[in-house]
Image (cartoon, rainbow, N blue to C red; front, side, top):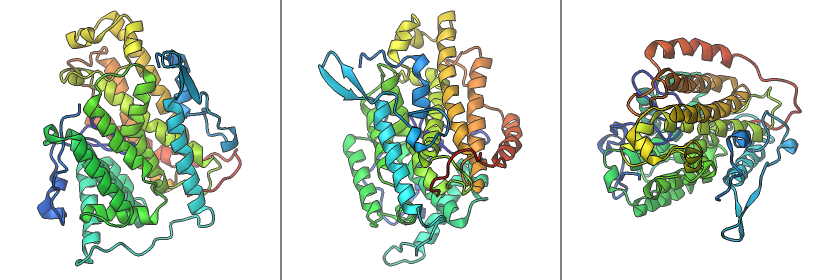
Length: 435
């Protein structure tokens, strides 16, 4: 299950796969060519195939997930959690819900941004981190990150050209790290991945955040996290999502699936908000903007899951809530049979409705971003949401027909996205610190 890196849209002929919301999965790792971009061998970090009876989480309650608190862009003082903990009668203990876990991350990251930019406003770029022995490697690494982004996420790359050079290079660096991480579990060498390899990748990440990059591309990200208030936790959480794919192929309920979607997709939005920046004219709370970024990642990932039901089933995987399948009178056997029935159509209608709720919540935050960052995010949102329309147009046959948005529709979406990016933030809420 590849990751959908949130704020990014792939373009012609390249569809975002089932992973990090922002970035699409790629079948060829040209950007990992050590002869061109690495100062050391990639070594043993090699990919491998990824593999509460709590009725609290019904479709009618999904909006609380879409906003991890309240819908809309309220002030942070009005940002309560719908449910903090859940009782697990079988275990006789209290367990923290996925919603609470993710909400805690949102609050932590928003607080970090507010502390960093409380008295600064815009980015105060510091000198680049230099790799020993070659002062030009960092600049080359950033250039290579831009090339990768241009090759595999054309629409998003065009949007990044509107950003300041500092933001532009930083988002490229994050893009490439997430893509490399995705390749560990979905790349051509995925059959060789082990939990130990992911542990090594995480150790390498920790070194990177300490200013000790392993190679050129790591150095680009090390430089980025030194300049922007980007925390390590979302990066670690993404790696945790990769671990989850090694050991888990079923999800009991939406609470479990929601956490997985956060790990592999919602994390990217949280990584990206400090880079994208919040408009100086926005009066939305920082937490609510992070929340909208999270919602877009969840929406993208749910869309990936619904698009790829047949493909995942061919690998013995079912990324759908088991309890909701049972309620609809369906089971894994029905999915493996691949027949579109009235039961399946009704089930899919509800799943699509849920994904659209997350997209609706995400829309509320895009306008609050820095003006130069809005266009690529709007493009990603509009293009990805159209995949749900295509599933419906295929009569909910996501077993043998892959829903995709044609080139014409993609091109027509770009001016619409640009027009929406020109809409200024609302001015009805109390001001807070902005990035």
